[in-house]
Length: 147
Length: 66
Image (cartoon, rainbow over all chains, first blue to last red; front, side, top):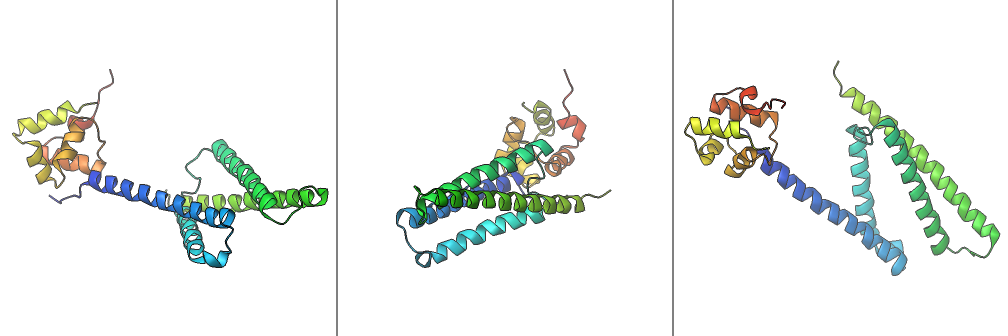
């Protein structure tokens, strides 16, 4: 009889590796945030970590999309809700960071309007990108289905 | 839920957990966890266990509704 591999061991090992990766991934983002907003370093001081973090993030995103796993396992309503909440939370964080850490004068109504407009542009871009990625991923997921 | 049927089939064949594990190339812990109902094996592993114990999937893994 053909021998099989012990799947439980493989699954457990993958879980450990996956958990370790998640910690490193979160750690990298925290390091970037700390260096940028607390130490106020220039990107030239941490470009290596920046490239690594963005590279890994892009890899995870692209692999998910091309494997047809990007949001495709969710139900339609839950998918919409998830994307919308992500967009709103992301835009609020972007607007706050943009407002507090850029050279805007928060007592000037002109600057406040600028910050709000940048937040709205971020939200629209985010939703557009999400919509594109979900459609692409759904198309890929459908390609895998055999009639 | 414990898999008593699998344990019975193994005992009928006069195999220890270790021996069954060796025959299908998994660890004793995996067999023990399946019998204790703490691990859900894949279909591939279920088939290997069934073949080794001379039983069908229904015999070992089908639960009748109460």
